[in-house]
Image (cartoon, rainbow, N blue to C red; front, top):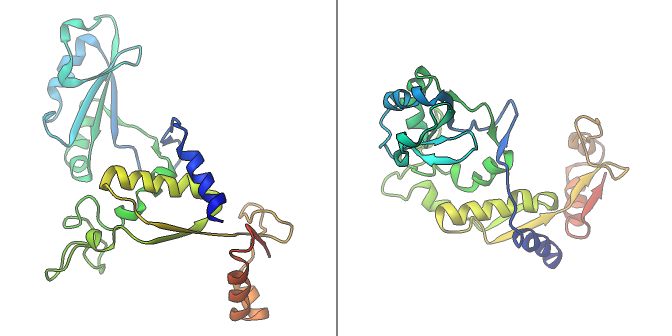
Length: 249
């Protein structure tokens, strides 16, 4: 139902919302921010010890006790309250910068933020991050994997496969994932990652409850296949995909 689901999508986009992208989880992309709090009379010495702050891959700010941020190169040392503490905040923009500077920042008293990025922030990068963005030519791949850069005068993976055509997903993550992928694609690459979105039904248990590992109400498709056959399961799922928003099994 493109009218219904399109309305959900448009309605969410029509309102500006704050989005806290940090999470206190044990897994996820670690936020690339290093922090340290220093008294005003020590701050300049710490700043002097920083790695090259003119490097475009290292950004730094100071924050006062009221939380006001100021770029490091705009600071006025004479304006500092000598009785106050200030936070020094450093962002490393890519993996190479982290490899080069992380140990140096820790050596002068800064520690990396323990939070990780919201799952949906990381997931919003999926359409292009898996293709080697921002630079497929230097993107790391696991042993045995095909390089993401150009090979034999063929285009690299990012320019070959981005943007795509159709995304297939469930109705429950239209705003969590679909909309945010579109936003990230437009902001970072100037183009949406896909032009069409096929919304399939959600599969529930026999009582109409969402399947959950904690509830133990999930159904193993192999059990259905063993009893009814693979073709029967395929037919039922395909036949019910667009006729309802939920499928009970």
